[in-house]
Amino acid sequence: MFSTKKLATSMAAVAALFAAQAGHAQNGLVDAYAVEAGGGEHVQVLRLSAQKDWNKNWFPTSGYHLSGYWDANIAYWRANQWLDVPGNRHNLAVIGLTPVFRWEADNKLGFYADAGIGAALFSDVYRNTHRQLSTAYEFADHVGMGYVFANKWELGARLQHYSNGGIKHPNGGVNLFMVKATYHY
Image 1 (cartoon, rainbow, N blue to C red):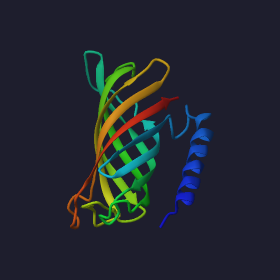
Image 2 (tube, helix red, strand yellow):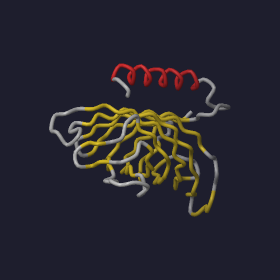
Image 3 (cartoon, rainbow, N blue to C red):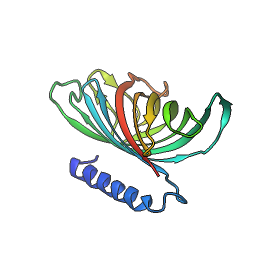
Image 4 (cartoon, rainbow, N blue to C red):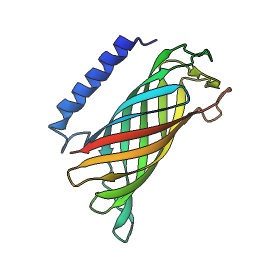
């Protein structure tokens, strides 16, 4: 199980890795970094992610097209009603990888919509409130929208859902509302 100190240290190490990669983003594995924050029923989430654009131009129509990116992330979850006991807190770490499809402008600026389904691994089986999941492996899917500015900053929001897809019961699912800020290199 992860302690808060270990999780904070891990997230700081990942942030340092992201910063080191930024100087080599043009030819590297990563061309954007994001910070997301949000939550759901008695849970708050902070997530850092690194992204790699696919640079595809599928179905071009009226200045827009379908493309996508890989999203690798690490997150800190703070559950506030662990084992369905009010005030009982528990921290979790979650790592994930998601292929994300994005409907975007040809110049990659302005409004966009995206959706993805990926995999996530929790440091502990989620047992917060009556929302209990029976496996540490979960599917992570989302739909979102946002805006990319000319200075390469992006602001967005998404609805995120975690579930094990019925692999094992209980499978209450966890729903989150997340906001994000991304910088593209």
